[in-house]
Length: 176
Image 1 (cartoon, rainbow, N blue to C red):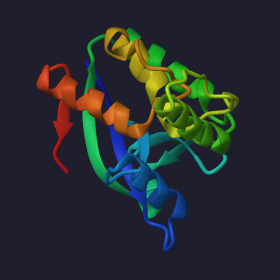
Image 2: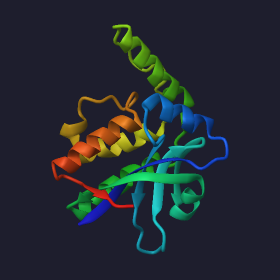
Image 3: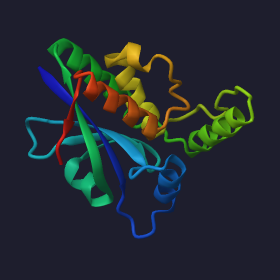
Image 4: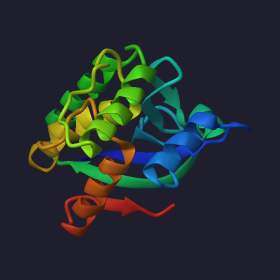
């Protein structure tokens, strides 16, 4: 039995304009979502997230310098084979380009939805943090995430779904 942690954070930068804008837009305490994995050969965890230009794999030590963890959820993977398939999927996306425009596209889709029009995100090239995490979570919980579009999912929506999975006793919330 293995575990992957899904976490939510906010920036520790002195003047985190993007983090503030995302938190204000979502009305949340967090602006970022990431994956955390225990690696037996290192003292600290491995963080996989999309930020600052690309999909990154970094040490917990370096991540904690830039991010304040707000909330985390622990997802249990029963099969070692399935766990390694998920790790392989995360690894395949490492180094892929980040897309600021995709985030702008999410706002555009929301505005159009408010105006009664259904549109797709016009900027689907590259990755943002929620798309990366959603791609992994769809592999683990296909039914729970099937109605969501990876190109428009937000950290807030992922957080809401994970809170329901805690209620359904499918995952656990990590005490910080």
